[in-house]
Image 1 (spheres, one colour):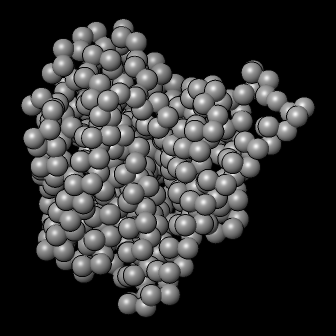
Image 2 (cartoon, rainbow, N blue to C red; image 1 turned 90 degrees about the vertical axis):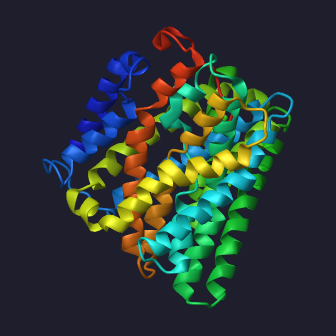
Amino acid sequence: MTLTILFGACLLVAVLVSGMAARTVLSTSLIFLLTGALAGQGGLGLVSLDANSPLVGNLADLALFTVLFVDGTALRNLRGEGSWRQPARALGVGMPLAFGGVAVLAHFLAGFDWITSMLVGAVLAPTDPVFASAIVGRSDVPARLRRLLSVESGLNDGLALPAVMILISAAASSGEHAGVGLVVLELLGGLALGVLLPLAVHQLLRVPGLGVEPRIQPLGPLAVGILLYGIAHLTGLNPYLAAFAGGVMVARLNPAAQESFAPLGDQCAELAKFAALLVFGALLTPALLASVGVGGWIVAVLSLVLVRPASLYLSLLGGNLERRELFAAAWFGPKGFASVVYGLLVLHSGIPQAKDAYELVAVCIGLSIIAHSSTDVPVARMFQVEAMADLPEQKVPAS
């Protein structure tokens, strides 16, 4: 109950200061993270949580599922000539470069074996636009930059997932391929579930006599998402690929339902993210921060200030982005909820160096939240965004 009260209090404070946060370096996301850290075992001890607590795993799992489902439904809003050109370069070139760069650092500076090093690189590959809201949510910022950051973050969660699962299996099986094969089947099964269930629901809606009352139309996609979540966990199929594929299919098959669901979906995803941030903050104890070691801290810092910026800069070089757009895109590679969940998957996998890998990932995510959520407004000022709290927010695809 203490955690519930803390969440409600943080949510109220976030609402009350949201106008100020839109104009300054104050971050509503940071409120939840710092409150969690203060209330956790490394602070006042009001909340007793560790990374192995069922609440932590279940909440992170649900948060990522929600975000991926909403991301999938939002992809339908992508418009414009050449919409995919820059995101494709970021995903096809920048993401593998960042993956490899982090893996090399983790191997030589943190002392991980190569499989675990590649696993850390895969876990830290996804990005999250929620910590760059002043960039992706404002019409004053060039649409191609907002689209780039939003589409990149909307797709890289799902793209990183197969690599994470296969590398975990490879590390656990010590060269045996049976485990990897099972993981691939679970991934393909989740993808199939995400495609087939919305198709079945769509066929039901075509049965004579059935129809949707407009007032409750937003609940249709929500019902599909809940079914996907339950069936995936009951059958052992991968819920995250099911979520993303299901969201894409819902939007493609029934654009009207997707349009009505969008405001509800955005709010559900926002609440899930805030709750996950509060819990994640409680895990960031002084003991965890100290256990990473100097080499781990160097990896975490360099992954944010060197590897991600350099990788994206190289992937976008020669494109049509202006210098300030290129700078903003290269800097905003925040690590978010996908990395939290994937890090917990690593911790619970039982592979060698699992705990060390999770702690490095946790430090990197914490640093990213602090750095990126506190710099989105100053960077947005480069695009002459003024009086940001008074500007209407621009809907961004795949956010």
